[in-house]
Structures are given as C-alpha cells and as structure tokens.
Length: 163
Image (cartoon, rainbow, N blue to C red; front, side):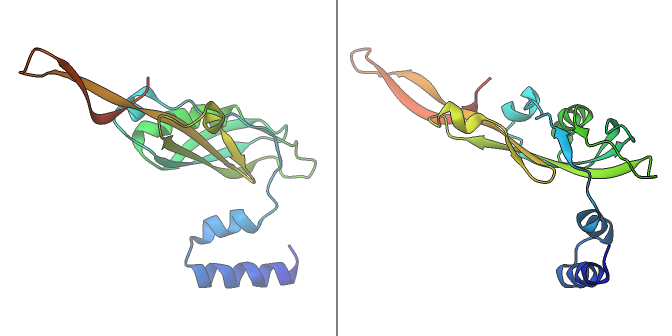
C-alpha cells in the first residue's frame, strides 16, 4: 500500500469511527470475485417478517475457494443461509506468497410489495462483496360474512409473506 493510501485509510478510520479491522479489509488489496452465489431467503425468516443484513467472514485458500464461512453479524434466522451461500463463492487464485486470505461478504435480505414485478426479485450483486435478495409480501384477504342477506364481502386485513 502506498504512503498516500495509508494516510487516507488512517484518516478515514478516525473520521468515521468504524472498526480498524473493517477499515483494514476495505483498504487492503481485496481478492476479485470469480463467481458469487445469492442466498435463499429462509422460509422461517420471511414468514416471521425478518429482514436485514448478515456479514459473513470467509477464509479463501490460494486456489480461490472459500474454505470457511462464519457469520459475524446479523439476525440468527438469516445466518445459516448466508454462510451456505458464502461457501459457494469463488475468488481469483492468489499468485503471491500469501496462502490464506480473508474477506467479509454482506448479504442483505429485504421485502418488496406484492405487486412488484418479477424482475425486482432478481438478486442484486454490488461490488466488492454485497448481495441483496428480496422476497414479495402478498396481501391476505379475509372473507367476512355480512349479517345482512348472507352476502360475502372481501376485506383486506394485513400482509403476509409469500411462500
């Protein structure tokens, strides 16, 4: 790392108040991604309305394969799916003397309205290491029987997650 880049990195850490570990990862030479895998939104998470992000720390061998994935932040119901997806990521092989590299991947789980088109459900990959997956919420319609003349009237009550 050049002296100018090091000075910028140190100034950024002090100004922003972020963790020095995260800053070191952000300003180090990050391994390039060859292929990435998006997680599957866990059924238990979307049926209970859980969304948010999960940070997974991965260990990458010299061949570019993820050998270890451990969720370090995020909601427990989303962690296993994030770790499983992280294992499937591949990085550019390391040609230097460093045999093991570390990176932090971020998986974002969010909801979109029920009338959102299917194109919006496509996972979004953002450089260097972030993936956003979305799940539709669908309206739940309760059908009530009116006391007059036995007519049925549909009444939207709430939203539930689409299975």
